[in-house]
Amino acid sequence: MNAATVKNGPARVGIGGPVGSGKTALIEQLIPYFVNRGNEVAIVTNDLVTKEDAKRLQQSGLLAPERVVAVEAGACPHTVIREDPTLNIQAADRLEHDFQNLDLILIESGGDNLASTFSLDLVDYWMFVIDTSEGDDIPRKRGPGIVQSDLLVINKVDIAPYVGADVDLMVKEGTEVRNDKPLVLTNCKTGQGISEVGDHIIKNVLFN
Amino acid sequence: MNKQEHILALLQHGDSFFPSGAVSFSWGLEMLKQDDFVSSKHDVESFLTNQLAERWAPFDRVVLAHTFDQSDAIDDVIKIDRLVECMTLPTELREGSKRLGAALCSTYAKLGVAKAEQYQQLIFDDAALGHLSVTQALIWKAIGLDKNSVLTLSAYNFCVAIFGAALRLGLVGHIDCQNSLTKVRTLISDYIALPVTDIENIHAFTPNADIASMRHENTGTRLFAN
Image (cartoon, rainbow over all chains, first blue to last red; front, side, top):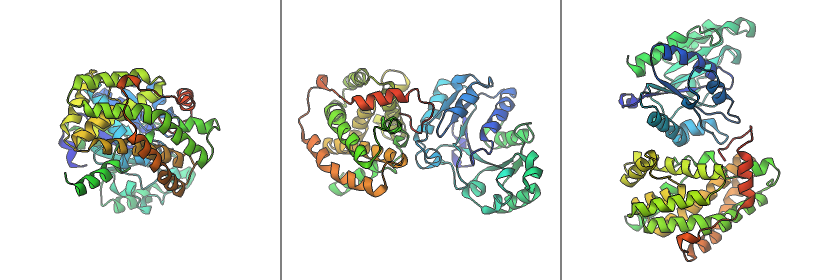
């Protein structure tokens, strides 16, 4: 979490991680979590080639479609969340202007590699989502996404036995390389671990 | 600002490191590639030189120059902005110009440029449209650049945007891009030296890019916003 957390306006939370790790599924679980506690939420997605993630969220019925905005990445997902986040900032500014009671804007990166990080001008807090099927050696590979994110989410814990992943090892090594910064185990298909992710967001950027 | 500082300012504001949002736009090139109209570095160069000749020089350059001259008369600037809207028919080119113009205002407002903040508010209030060439002239003048520098930056940024898109589309290599950027210097210099027409006479004729942009609106597979 950076110093910008104390600014006015909705909290901006980034969600990064490799392709297929479950970023959109995590958002689909987080929306009802926050809506049910009375928070106003909007989403910015950075689909790479299609608008599939944005459409999936717009058609989910979880939020009014106009609260989900897609920003094109021009081929490189990390470019628009780190090197030049201008259009994402603009999209978040626009949502903030159009929906003045917003509490939270979730900004979903396109799927990227372990070196992916968010500009501190774009987000107040960011999460990195990996999953067990990518291999249980991912945490000890120490990519900036793994090490620097405010919260590491290890998703698809339910399939770990079938892909030969040792979840306990992932937790141990993830905790070590992150110097005890938090990590959460989730199954975004069933909702396992979602309230814990939500609680971290509340504690660190919503403050209520 | 002295001459040395002016050079440094040009480097800073013309650098692709400067956060402008331009990386998400191909200005028709992505669709032209998908349709096999552009498939080599020569095609990219032809696309760019045609855009400079038929769009940037008779349209954007004139808009930039007039906005620069009238930057203190904000109502006149808004009229130029509306003219750009009326004269840019393809939706994605028109919306792309406004998205980047608004993004430019947003970035410079955060950098403390009062003119950018003022125009950003007009855009938020739907009192101004915020087309790119209009906001470039307004803001770059406000930070102390002269008119020649503003025109140069605009043309250079456009070239870099096209070559950057071409690079990521796999049409050119990075050495090709640098060679081409060197080649178009003379062309850009010649266009900048042309007399500026009345604002009512702005015109553009880029049918390939315009049609590609319109086709791009309905494509399901895309990397770029236009």
